Image (cartoon, rainbow over all chains, first blue to last red; front, side):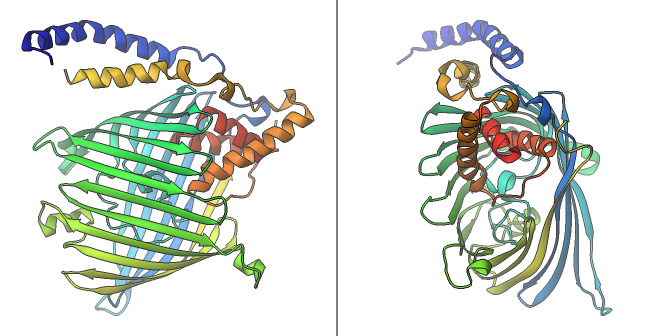
Length: 363
Length: 96
């Protein structure tokens, strides 16, 4: 155990060493890599416009909502190591108005606009507005063409608002049987009227992926650097067994805003021999989730997109892939809550597009 | 004292290239230089990596033009924290 004097000595020592250490790290990040060739000459990347367009009808507790979304993604590679990427979101949410017609707001916002610098095979430096790496749904599963069920998980709003700042991230093998991935970030996000207020937070996520069993587990953390300096924690899992076309995902999150989990399985019917051609394009999904209210008011929770009270929900869904990037999605779920139980139906169509903004074939 | 964990994390990052096994970082997607058998091996490995990494989130997309696919892979390297080798092998698989 350190005495107070030793503790102070250690602190002074670290204060002397820290600048040198950071200098070494920065040199490591920006030094010429030893064995990196980003792409072959014939695969020089070209800017692309990609994204998702979706039209979905939600019926929540008898109320119909027509949801139209376009999420364009622009990717601009610069040289061998840079990538500028951005995603916008344009969403119309139309409901039946007293006048008899459908109407409602059209939201538009920037999900991310970031510059990525691939410093070496193990570190990528990101700056700008980026998706907060808390859990896996926000970063990896959010696009409509990827998600197996169209309704968001109940805990999605916990610590997943976009961040403005800088981030280090990457992945590297630690052995022949395991890869590690990580992300660490600092954010100063402007909020409020004209961005006068701001929220500062730091956080990170780390995961280990075992290619053999195709299992990934990881954890996330975020700390707000102001006011009551609250922490949020999360755990995630993804598993695709080799024997069956099943994809499992799960997240758990805990924060002062609330806590909860979701676990989801998506099973592709490709092993069925009856109507094999159709079954190969069909996916069945089930998700179980629970949310437990935190230390904020129900109004504050609802303003964040969280349930107003403790809730439990089970969803069943089916996806039919008409062709690559085009699918029909439908689901039914029932939410049980002290604020009221209701059914949730969803049906719609989602399309993923990709257009090279230049010559896409080899040169 | 709060800086110590940050410094340790940064140190771990900077030392990571030294700790990683060399056998997994020498593969290249430089198509002109590989022999037919090497190309077959890389294609098989690329498909395995694709199923293991990309398949964690989505089904296999169609093969896009090579230069577009190179951009997509660079994006996915950042988004899905793919390793350098995974990105190269998947890119090789998706463009051959």
